[in-house]
Length: 124
Image (cartoon, rainbow, N blue to C red; front, side, top):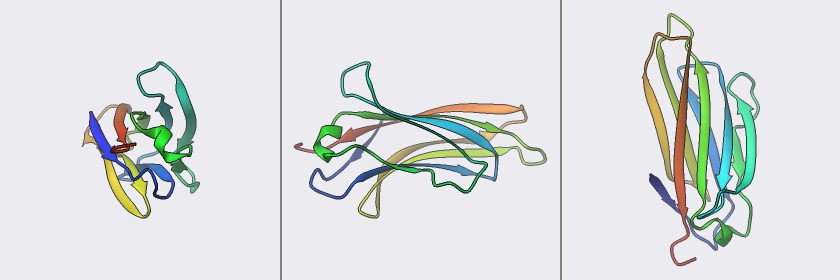
C-alpha cells in the first residue's frame, strides 16, 4: 500500500480524485480509521460536472495518523478513446505528499478501480 507522510502541525490534509482522458465516471472516497473497520468520512462525486473533487480530511491532523484513504472509482470507456486514468492524490500546504493511481487501455463498457493510501503523521 502506498503511504503519504503529512505534517501534523501543517495545514489541512486534502484528498483529491482526478480522472484523465475525459472519461465520465463516479467515485466514493472513504477515510478508514486506523486498525479498525470504521469509516470516519465518506464522500461521493463524479467526473461529469465541474464540481471540485478535492476534500479536506478531518482535523486535528494528528488524528489521521495510520488512517487509510480509499477511492473506489468507475469510469465509462467512451470510444474511440479506450484509455483511462484515475488518481488519488494526498495534498497538504500546496504540496503533493503521495498517492495512488490506475491506468490502462480497455475496450469494455466500464472499468472499476480501487486506490489506497495510508496516512503517516511521522511522530504524531
